[in-house]
Image (cartoon, rainbow, N blue to C red; front, side):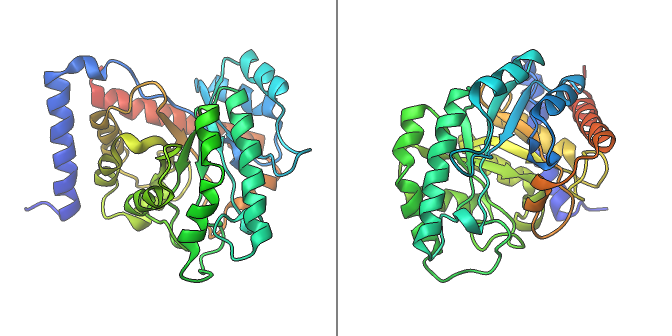
Length: 315
């Protein structure tokens, strides 16, 4: 029986991985850095989050970008004290972009809110040792477009703060989001076009998300390889946007593609973000946390990811 089209693509990635394993095994010695994006935990204390991640053997965190105003959000010293007590380092910050702070908005005060928000998050991310800040070009939860000038407005607005990324040593990571949630920038290719439109050395990286990629890319593994060195972080969830191992995601191909890409190095992170299905996940950030359910989800995801990683590496 002949292979299906996606299986042919899978085999090419497997062949590249096996060739790497045979010819340059030293490149496989270091494991992928596993992080976690915590905003989906809702109104949970950072201390409870840090304890859970430590118990699951996760050493990095992508912090909720919750500095929505000058008096809101995590504070540097407290954040570092809590995370340090649990052996966790900050990988980066998950920037949150709603209609209230939409880079692409046709209402000037919303774009100004996005600028002010980015200034706060860039400074905070640098202060806690994070290497990247996730940026969504258009509001999440707004799949209908304003007009034909969204991308141009968004790029122009982001360019206003691009120098700050360079000054603070923080990388802007553009995230493509599925078309059910945002009106533009849905694929890796779209993100690259957006980066080119911004045209600034401070905006050069991509945050991919396998859940969105299932909807928008023809093949997740191929798209990851196409992202190349721009890819700095990868959000993970299974096909049902739940814990890894609870759906039908071809996790092995994703892991092999990441090793072929050389993603197992400093400053590159695999970051689970299981949020559950739906058109607008942002309300989850204000939800009441179910500690037992979250504990199971994190432990299940971390253990399954490492299990598949070790199975592929043959150790």
